[in-house]
Picture 1 (cartoon, one colour):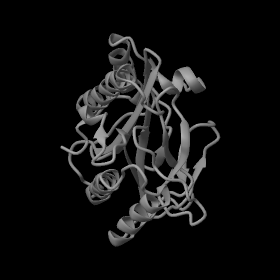
Picture 2 (cartoon, rainbow, N blue to C red):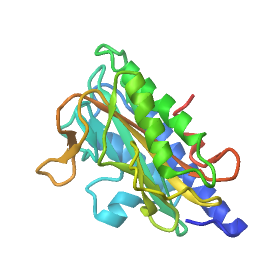
Picture 3 (cartoon, helix red, strand yellow):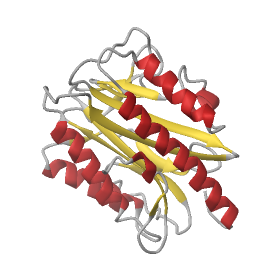
Length: 254
């Protein structure tokens, strides 16, 4: 969305603080032996305590308050009482919500407990690449150039990117223009980031796959070639200098 008055910026800061805090608290709450449904319900209670509504639940009737993807699930994992978290699991939590007519989105991947499967290089790559991409964004920068930066940085580390998932505009709804903040360069895309707009930028860094496929449940995404994928996401306000990280309360870069 385009921010044209102080009240709009305040609204975006408030909802972003909520989703960022919810993501951080859920990450800290996650424990071996816990079901993803229990973790999701904990997140849902936090959102409710702020008066916020789960965005995927409200917008798409998603069967959960948050998306929790485990190991080979790429995104949109459905919380389940049957899915029990184990030591060394690769977990992704994506939290988005609406508060007072404003929407914000963030996410992050992490290893639960000891990194017995050596997922950390993939997790750290996703974090670092997102940070480099975000701090390269300002008004007038081509969206395609950020996509090229993300893919180039992934390849440097021996990884690939998921090409059919993307960051997006956010603010007055969960998904707004631009809807094509991809993790690779599309030469024909001449669109540029605009100053004073809010967008959700996210990385999808992969060990093998390049495309996310939907399972029969209609929600859960997995890679077309297997392997593992990490995602990190921040909602930002674009300026003509460094962006404002609206969801910094998630502490994914700490």
